[in-house]
Image 1: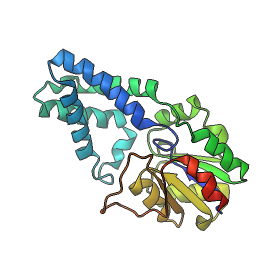
Image 2: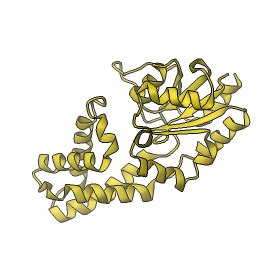
Image 3: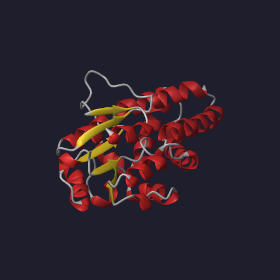
Image 4: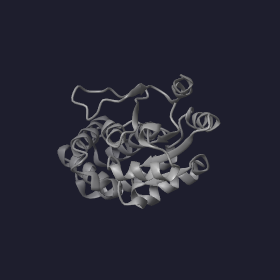
Length: 236
């Protein structure tokens, strides 16, 4: 039984993938119509270029604090690969950010799980990468802060996952030892590997849409599909 559970935010508490797919669907439809391209081919090109860009997370980690800039680079590369004019990439990136915000919603099991963890008498924390303004906007819009004993945002703290300092700060704030804490997230490199580097139990959540490759960055201590599985784990 842990004394504290830390949560990732994007694609753990909030369904960023669903919002991403909806936003890119709308964006690519509009852009393709204006540029005389195929919407699905454009979406595929953006997905491909995004995979290339973020493949080495350690090498491009600084772009987490400038997601719109990173997105503009990915879009420009995708447009160029499709033989299209890349000059509108920055505007496309901005339009995507606006639509993603509109479509973003919490997972159905997010707040019920946080309440169950609190009812079990555990400390709760949020550890999230990304720019301060963007992540604070999500926290404020969905009322996440009231559930948390500690919130660590990369853009505020100055470091992001998997940096050990991020997890150590969360541990100190709630007053528990690493072996007494779990961290739950969807990213094997940043969430699971980062937590395990300081002795925190790493729990990987895949939401039935992620697959763990043989060359994955870390091997999780536990694997769950959805947060609804967490209360049973805590009950032993």
